[in-house]
Image (cartoon, rainbow, N blue to C red):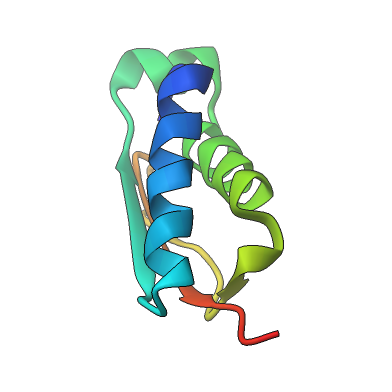
Length: 82
C-alpha cells in the first residue's frame, strides 16, 4: 500500500498480460505503519486502484480479505471470459 501511481500502473500492465494468457492473479499487499497513519484504509484504497486499472479484464472471485489491523490484504482475480 502507498505505492506510487507509475509503479502501480506498471504492475497492473503486467497483471493484464497474465490475465490475457488465462492465468489467475492474487494481489497481496502489506502496509507500513506510516502508510496506515496517512490513510487508515490504505490497503482497501490500493486494491480498489488495482481493480480500476485492470478494469474488465478480470473478475473478482471473492471479496478482499484483510486482517483486523488493516495492514494486510489479499484479492483473487480470474480472467474475464467475455
